[in-house]
Length: 480
Image 1 (cartoon, rainbow, N blue to C red):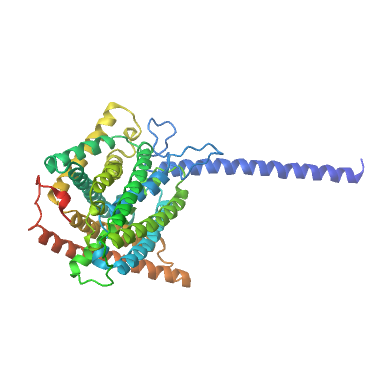
Image 2 (cartoon, rainbow, N blue to C red):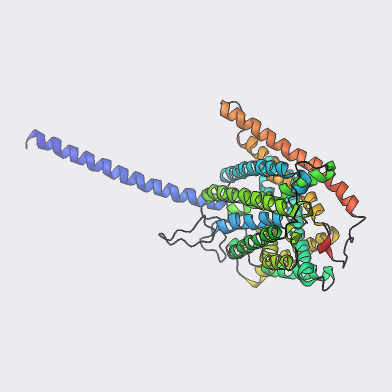
């Protein structure tokens, strides 16, 4: 046999060997990828859901008709939900631009909104670095051990329950406005409690997410009606003030109300945990923040421009005639569902804390549903008590923002970044700049907390003398 043919056969054999090795290598990579995916799933708060009765990780970033991906939208929760919850905190409370002047209000909306976008991004980075994080308590355990877990967990629960209370309070204001105070405000609060409790019974965000779409449409329609109403009924000689003389507590309370509009960060860990692909969270974040800030500016400027110093709180009451009732009526889904999603996150924290790592997490039985229902009942009862105990809407928002939103939206994100980048602070100019930014964000949270608590305390003490008091049947739609 010629020498060339031998060499050819050897080359063919060598080529086949390389091909086979590449094929084996590809198979090994596929096996490793599956193992990695299973390992990550085991780190997730809901574990491996392959054979689960209840599957939690069902949320998708967007709808893809070509690939037939159903829209179990984190966009409806992390975008629409954030819009209606935060637009509601802007439109259902007041920006208090009247106490800050329009220029100051716009600067704060843009500045705090930009910081909130960055801090939301940092929360996403922290979640991707530690997949097992489902809530702020888990993050606190990573930062400070068992003490951090309990501290952050208690803080998160108090914050969300206070937010739930603010929605029950808004429900009573809405019912008093629509019905002309047809009955005792406490009765309206109980009605809001029952409706919210029933809507919170679904155990997955997949089921709750569809409510978010209805709520999103609701709040946009209500805000448009409000802006149209104040524009049509604007005082003939309304003048936008370039400066106002406002006492410091009142001015800073207005600032904390703006902070509350960006207070959704406490729920982000929970949302990401129920996404099919957590890495796509960043897209949802940037979409929602761009939409949020734009909407906030439009509502704040238009409402204050035409309502002027007569801007009321909630802002849906700034119109006259039948329009307040119409706006509140259309906003009913938002008022209820926004609180429901906060209630769901709070109940999910308790449920995961109690049953994490057990088959009770994924069971669909009467016992599991009963356990979930009891948790929901206790949480909404606590929220109702808070709503009745602090009847002045703005003071409740200010207290919650100062004590909790200051840290969950701002301060803690600075700590998360510093923890993730420990030992790398001086690696480059960019890293040094980011270090300075996150230290700044930490102090922003600290300042908002300290000064906000002072402003809220002064305001609550002052309004306690003129308000209808706690657990009162009086009409609270005329306050603010």
